[in-house]
Length: 65
Image (cartoon, rainbow, N blue to C red; front, side, top):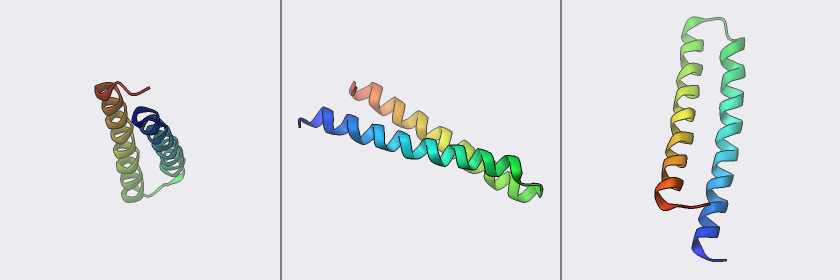
């Protein structure tokens, strides 16, 4: 495989894992009742969304499909 294909597969796998983290963090956030814990779950959600955005930006910058 050439490098762009390898990178494309890597980004795809990374996005899949981030999607799982995001879904579970959102579920956790919705189920928690204590404000401190909800705040921590919200931080995980926010960080995961930022990571997904960073992956998207890198893919676009390097024009990886």
